[in-house]
Amino acid sequence: MTHPWKSTDEKRTIVFSYSPGNNIIQYLTDMRNLINRAIINAYAMAKSNNNELPSPIVLRRSLKNYYDNNIIYAKHHINPACRNAIAILRSYKKNNNGELRVIKAERLAMRIDSELIKIENNKLRITIKPHEYEYIGIVDKNKKFSEYSKYKLSEVLLTDSKVCITFRTGTLNKPVMDDNIIGFDLNFKSVDYTIIKNNEIVKVDSVDTSDIAKTQRDYARKRTKIQKHIKNPAKRDRKLMEAGHRQKNTVMDKLQKLTTEIVNDNSDKTFVFEDLTDIKKKGKKNNNKKYKNNKDSKAINEKSNKNKNHKNKRFRTDINRWPYRLFQKLIDYKSKNRTLYVNPEGTSSECPVCGGKLRHPIWKESKCINCGVTFNRDRLSSLSISVRGLYLCGTPFTVSGSSSWDSMKNNYLYHPDHVVIENSSDCKKYLHSNA
Ligand SMILES: [Zn+2]
Image (cartoon, helix red, strand yellow):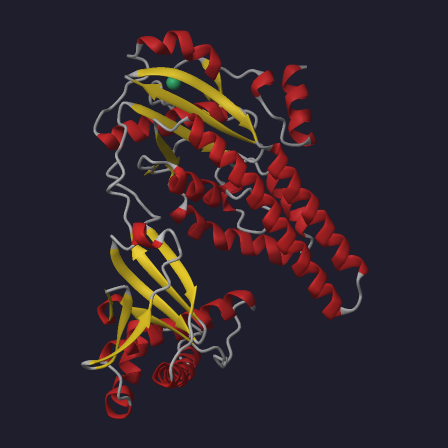
C-alpha cells in the first residue's frame, strides 16, 4: 500500500443573511451574464466533441478574449464563472441521461475564489475590481465563526441574500491515536468494528443498523406506490419530493443519534474507514445501468441486496442505499481525533491474518484456505481495516503475531448468530449450506 494520509472532509462553512448594495447586485448580475455566456460556449464545444463537456480551464480559454476586452472586474472572477457553467451543465447532463441543452442560469449567485477575499475586522473584503473592494459585515452570531475563522479562507458563495464563507479547517490539528484504533466495516444491516489498543485486539462487535435499512426500504416502497397510483404528473412529482425530504430527515435523524453514540463511546480512539470516494465514481456507471433497466426503485434495492459481490453493494448511489459516506462524514466531524481512510481494495479478498486469498462460499462467509477456517466476512473486514489503519500510522500490526489473536479468534469465526441475514435468499443459501 502506497497510500498517503487521507483526509477528505476539511472544510467548514458558515452562512448568514445580508442585504447587498448596488455594486454587489450589479456584480452578481454581470457574473450571471458571464456564466450564461460560458454555458453557451461550453455547449457548443460539447456539441463538436461527442457531447463531452470541456474542462473549466479549456472553457476559460474560449472566454478569455471576451473577458479581457469587456469585463471590468478583476481577472480572477473568470475562473469560478467557468467552473459554475460546467457544473450547471454537468448536473443537467447527469439528470437527463447524458442529454445536453443550453440552460439559463437564473439565480444571482457567484463563487469567489480565496485570492479575492479577505477577512478584516469582522468584515468580509471582496476584490470586485482591481484595487476596489466591497465590504460585507460578518454576522458572527454563528457560534462556529470564531472557531472556523482561525483557519484559511477557502471560498465565498455570494447570493443576493446570503453569504456562505467556507474555511479550510484541515484535520491536521486533530491528533492520531496510533495506539488505539477502531476500524469500521459498513454494511447494509450492520456496522462491524474491531478495536486494536496497545497492540492487542481488544474488541470486535457488530452494531445493528437494520433500522436505517428498513427506513430506506419503507420509503422506497412508498415512492413506488406514489409512482403507480398518482396519475397527475405535477402532483406525483410533489408527492415524490415530499417523501424524499421526509426520508432524508428520518435517516439523518437516526444517523445523528447513532454516530453521536458511537463517537461518545470511543472518544479516545482514532476511527478508520475504507476510503469510498473512488469506489463511488467507479460505481456510478454500474448504478446507472441498473436504473435504466429497472425503473422500480424497490426492485433495484432488492436486486442489489442479492448481489453477491461485496464491493458492488457499495456501488449503489441511489436514494435507497445505506448512507455510508454520510456516516463516515458525521463520525469524522464529531470525533475529536483524526479519522483515517484506508485503501479499500482487497479488504474482503485478502486474509488479514495470513495474507492468503479469501473465498466467499456464501455472502457472509470468508473462507481462508491457508488458515483453514471460515470467518465472518464483515468482522474480518473490520479487522483488515484496523490493520491497514495502523499501517498508515507507521505502527504495523501483525494479527497472527499478537497474543490477543488466539483469544479473540473465535469472535471472527463465521457463526450464524453473528450474522444479520440480509434477505430471504441469503437465508435459503444459509439453510442450504447447513443442510
Ligand atoms: Zn488466512
